[in-house]
Image (cartoon, rainbow, N blue to C red; front, side, top):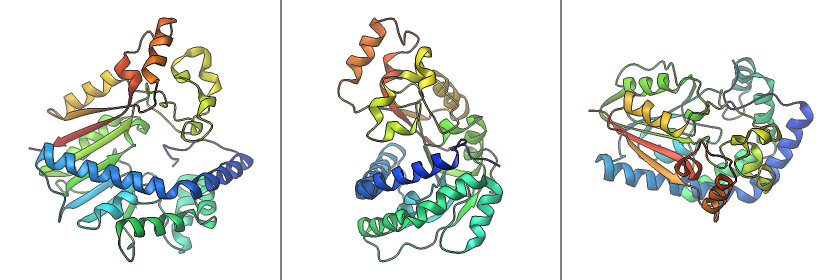
Length: 300
């Protein structure tokens, strides 16, 4: 079984990726942790306001828990938490999870994880999370290897489902939506967010998250003559904004759709200029200038 979020990379590519990751992460970890925690606090406030739902003493599922488990540790401070991920998430020094990761997700994912842990990146995240959450220890969290489109949980198992930056990687997001509906209890709330493919950084070429972002250029993944210049390392379903809206209207009627705009200065001027030059004509400004989308839904 492969990963939705990784593609083929040779050994030298993995080494360079690991070195770049270490150099970038060691500088940015405090800011990254602060940003994630600020987002989660904002999300809690939005859920309480829009859904009259308080995140205390709840059964919480985090879909796409990721390597650093920041959402699980945040929600786990006051709730009972479970995480799932398409990749096996190895915690601690026990070799068995790494063998299982190799078996299920391949040597590339395993190599990345081992290198990341060897370089001390995970330890830095743990230390920073403990500091910013003001807790003496981060307990081991339950993270199961599972497909969001076919979960093993029983019906009505959770009060809150959190799914951040996963749906744009799914070949069949409607299946995941229906699974979330099934495992939510009446009165429960789902939060789904995804990176919009038509956004400026929607190619998810790894360079867009580094100082090399300028190399990726402006919306090149939507301009046929430039597509070959990009190097995405993940599967993307490339759904348009209208398609997402139709999908949630059909499967989660009444869901609140929140468009979060790009924060780069000059992005609207750049988009308008390209459109004036005859490019990106098929895309609305809403599509081009929305960075990511939040979906909030309360089960009746």
